[in-house]
Length: 224
Image (cartoon, rainbow, N blue to C red; front, side):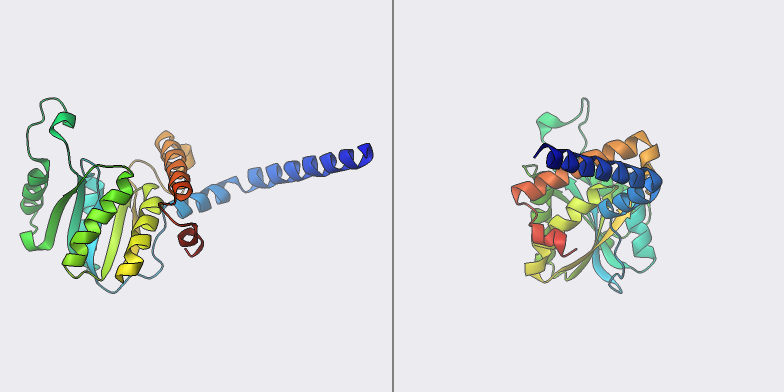
């Protein structure tokens, strides 16, 4: 019995050593694949999507807006939807009194966009935030008869957001394709940047949480 136990421990140790060697030998390739998993890109987008959805929080990153405007100018989408989380007056930063969504509209018009080319919406802030935001956004898309959409999210947040949208869009017969946007770190060597590592770990943990709570069905992940 002891001999068998030692044999099993020996096999386990050998497997661990081999795995460690493989990981170290192919570390960059493995981490690149992990990054691509967390920030998927559509292999083949719809010819011209009805909308491009830009995901923000209380605010929207300049890089996200630039990506959306590029998709419009390249003829990949007909119009742009900017999704913001509604800011409670109690949660606004000190000395912040302006209507941020109105400021976004004004800035887009200053950049030369017509009002018919974009919509700024504010979604309620309630847990789970990404799911609640997607549900509120899709209510508007369904009302407007949208059938195809591009989804732009920052960095590694895209995987969780894309799976949420795809799960909700499937029964609505809406096709959604992911478009990653990186600003603070490069997707092919994210592990060399502190922001990249923090973003990957944080977003991977949130993805596991969403899967564990059933906000994203496991079958959605398997079918990806």
